[in-house]
Each structure stands twice: as structure tokens, then as C-alpha cells.
Length: 151
Image 1 (cartoon, rainbow, N blue to C red):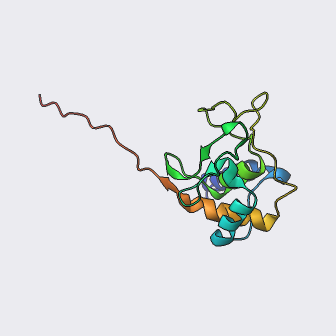
Image 2 (cartoon, helix red, strand yellow):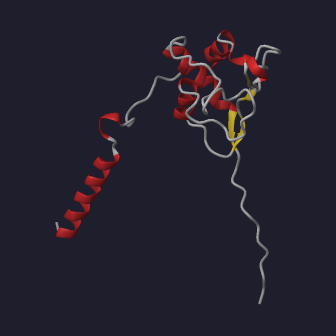
């Protein structure tokens, strides 16, 4: 092996170790697969539809505190990953839409969505995520069409 190949292999190894994130790294972490039908039941049982609606579960009328209404699912420009949805449920203030409406944010940028971590089981969480994820459809990238100029 020449010294450049050895150096390249060493550098790749160092980069991989550096990117792993150490003890706090999420690499290798995943939850079991959920049951979408059970997730729909949980979505309704936990009254998620007091503030949210999905294409197949309407929001409850008059149940939303502060008239908060957040539609879940539909066409999106970026993929809604499993991790995105899990994080949105267990830490709703992690990412709040820039299109905030009154009632969506309570205080100092915190989401008005209550914390369900002590109410929801892990099984309910993975089922709700399994229910929600198929409702998001990635909108295809639209390329800008330029006119061709002939010289």
C-alpha cells in the first residue's frame, strides 16, 4: 500500500469518528415500527384533533384552546422524516412554523402544544408517528424554465 492510500484511509476513519457525535450521537437509534391504525385511534383518544386535523380526522369544533388549528399532512417541500415527527411530538417547541398565528405560541417562542411525554406511552408515540407520516407528500422540485437564446 502506498503512503497516500494509507493516509486517505486514515483520514476517512478520522472523519467518520469525528462525525459520530460521541456518546450523544443518535446513530444506530431507532424505535420499533408503529401501527398506523392504532396511531389514528390514539390521535383521537388523546384529543390531538382538538388542535390538529389530518385528511381523515377533522378537528373538533370549539375544542381548541385559543382557536389553534394546525393541519397535519399534505404537500411539503422537504421530507418529513420519522425523526422529525417524533421530535415534533415529544418537543413541540423544537421547530415552530414561521407562519405562527395567535394562539400557536404561548410565551417566549414556546409552542402552545402541551408536553405529552408523561401522558403518552412509547407505543402510542410510535403508532401516532406511523399514522402521521404517510399523510405527508413530498412535492416534486420545480425547476425554473429558461428560454434558450440562439446567437
